[in-house]
Image (cartoon, rainbow, N blue to C red; front, top):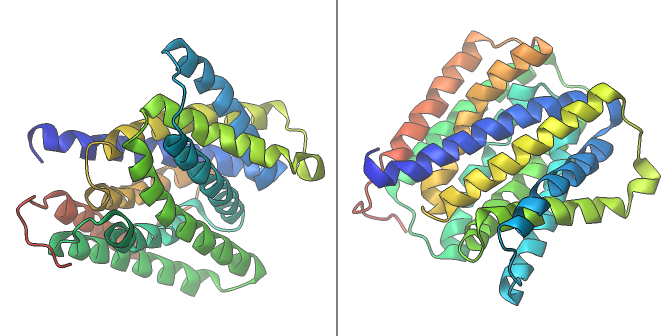
Length: 293
């Protein structure tokens, strides 16, 4: 990675790290007050944080096409977040992140169908290698921990969240072409806050001071991560940036141990090595490389 071409990749890696740390704080909060309450409060705090910034930097009248994309991604992201945070309450942090890596693999082909992006051999190879690493990790986890009702619910939730996440990448790419990072962040949090508010009377649990603090920190990390990723996706193709998501496992392993003392097995280390290799291969893709499709 050299010159200006490396900046979107570095931004994407930074955004993933910020959001991985957010996941750790949100897991703690979701275990205490439930995934729905935690997700709603994060969206409310995030909106309160970024809305004044958007207004202060000259909020524009949002065109209809941009508004449609903001609403679409807001709805998708809302359900994606709720199912993901629910999965975090049933599965370890690192394994949850690992399973979610099916999303970048799906996104490569959605980018071809919906965005018209060419899929290169390096992009496919890097993503498949990273995905193979996740299979190694998940297989080790399920083999050692057994399979119970909580595991089943957690897997169902993270698989649904991953499919929504894959589509979210595509909408993010379109969204970043018509709106700046601050505007993207405003609607990302705002739409989710309004949508979850409709159901809040039925699920809301009053948080204690610790949980509220963790959710506030999560909101800051969410806004920072969303803005960083929006900047990156405005400057590089989705297939080039999506494999950077695999680096999230490294952060999830670290934060899982720091927050919850979740260990990492030798098999997980091997799987992580495959993931890092996949990221490296995809990042070195040359613009002149021949596309597969």
